[in-house]
Image (cartoon, rainbow, N blue to C red):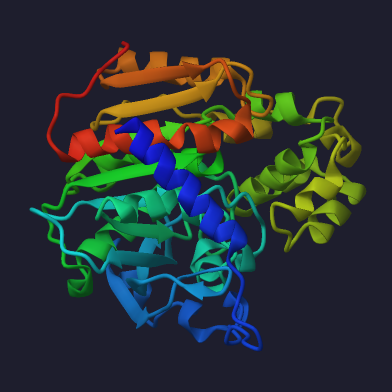
Amino acid sequence: MKRQLLTALVVSLGLLATAVPPAGAAPAALVEPDQDTFYQPAAGYESKAPGTVLKKRPVTVTGLGIPIPVKAFQVQSRSTDAKDRPVTVVSTVIVPLTPYLGARPLLSYQPATDSLGDQCNPSYTLRTGLEKELPLLALGVAKGWAVVVTDYQGPRDAYGAGRMSGHAVLDGIRATLASPEAGLSARTKVGIWGYSGGGLATGWAAELQASYAPELNLVGVASGGTPADLAAAGRQMDGGPFAGLFLAAAIGVSREYPELLSIFNAKGRGLIAAMDDLCVVEEALYAFHSVKQYSDSADPLAEPVAQQVLAINKMGSTGPKAPVYLYHSKFDELIPWAVGKNLSDAWCAKGTKVAMSTDYASEHNVLAVTGAPAAVAYLNARFLGLKAPTTC
């Protein structure tokens, strides 16, 4: 099983890396989300229940411009932001063309968007062929699962805001199950999976599911390199080669919690303007910067307003109802291994059946790929109804 999954992953990565458009052909021009009327909230969405389908359209999912042979459509659904206000989110639903023996399960896959611009969201990158994690979510499609990928950062591209992300994931699942085109039902078995920034959205969806979307038949969760503690991750990255990710997350969280803006000085406000629309690759331009450069505080993370927001966005206060597989590199240079271990301990203490795997042969980015087969195998076992393992 593991060898087959590894082979599928290598093949998927190879196809995506080597695929080129036919000579003389160019992909049809796509309108970026801020110019696409589909993303504009449907009239009256505020009065609808979370997860209500508001709009729908067929789309083509591509890898580097090559259409993927699947049935795909997008839905706009009503969701809830970090402060429980109504918003809308867009999800992309992918259904294999091959039949599935039995009731087809649904995988909600959360890529590490980690960006501040709406053109970086998967609903757009899956259509342009530039979604870097297509080979990973394709492992679910190859198993015959339906897959939903939601723009979980919400309409303000609030990178790092956990509650916004968790709500969006759960409402994307609700909207998918409510769409006849997906061929699913309210009792469909659901699994959620994500790594790094996608692990943040996955972990929050797992924590919030019992209270926010208890009707979902969530049977398994797989989350890797999980940023369960933004303060710990921030202190690890600040001033180092991945500082741009941390600065972008600080800006992203402030979009849901504008009270954080009081920490930024004039140079910080300039940073906010400069990073306003950046995707994750462009954030690397801010390597080795420190948040202290953009604040008059000697320790911005220790400011009372920052402590309050960081506490709200720290996982572990509620144990997920569904069993969880956590995987984390012992030598993770972005998210300290202790963050994953502390999350596992917190969830175990609250009764969640957690299986935690520590990898000693990788670092953060490598484990995103090498850890994928085990995550898929874990979710497949949950879909089959097998007993979940635990390291609690």
